[in-house]
Length: 404
Ligand code: F6P
Image 1 (cartoon, protein in one colour):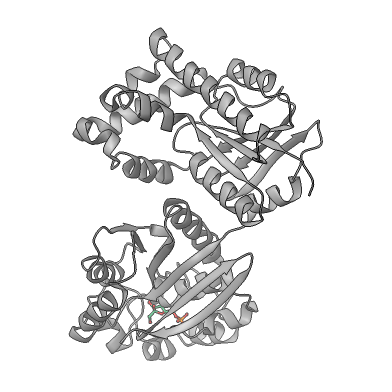
Image 2 (cartoon, rainbow, N blue to C red):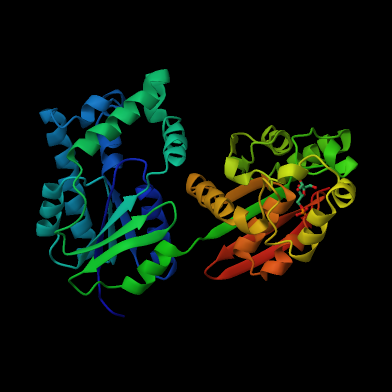
């Protein structure tokens, strides 16, 4: 067995996905039989200091000398622990902290000089994601005592870090990544970095442990064969939603991602109500294809009143753009963005659920399951079944299952 060892040092503003990446990397290394451990400064802070001190933004002010000293102390302690770990059986030590200042990083490089060291900077400036991530963070017990001041305190904490933030540059080895897109933006390596290829691979791979992809249940428009709009569930649709809830009762669903249309939210609500701790997050990215001038029409109406539209769409359904609306092709970037957002927000949970629409779910399926463009608009998306998708490095599964 080779005795190569590596320090990975994360950096980035709060709520940029560092800890999620740390967990993903650790799990992936462990799975390949490479002993790996995370050294998280926030965990030490929470362990050694009272929560009502460290949840307050003051604790992060660059002018609060006492707190700066405490935080530097935790960083040093983790450096020591990481070093000791690699001196024993550990192979990859992951240091998880903001490490926003160049001086801190220089100290890390100087101290952890017995094995190669790679910095990974996590960047993500998507406002929606930031907002939703902060909502998630402030639900943690750490913030409970702050009540409705929690979000403000957290934003102020971020602002303090922005004041001292110096991006990676002189460091010998680094990767700069977009943590929402799982994309490497920049890389520099002056030393030979062990496990480099597989590390890159772990970063860019979208792993899907369990995706339950559901189409909203029957609506009034479905019965009338009308498209688009924002119609309600029928009594049969409501019963189907309850059946879904019962079916998923024993699985732990922490989040359900929906569109902004009431038919997806109402379906999701019935499922959520039967869970212990579940939240619905509605994303505009998952709204159904915009049929433009054809919204709310039946397919028969379109054929009769707008025969050119009907004919052209039939001839090339994937590329056809509804006048004042969308095509499958033009929907693709927003669907991809929705998938990235849902996976970013759901990052810690084993199960992920999306309640979408016919065209939306076809696009989501085609993201994981290769289909020729021409075939995508015809993927079968029934309302009495759902897709169970697993797509990891060693397992691929697509199953259409009944819930009733
Ligand atoms: O009929 C339900 C629906 O979700 C419509 O709102 C949407 O326009 C349509 O399906 C998309 O399917 P297709 O591309 O086959 O028309």
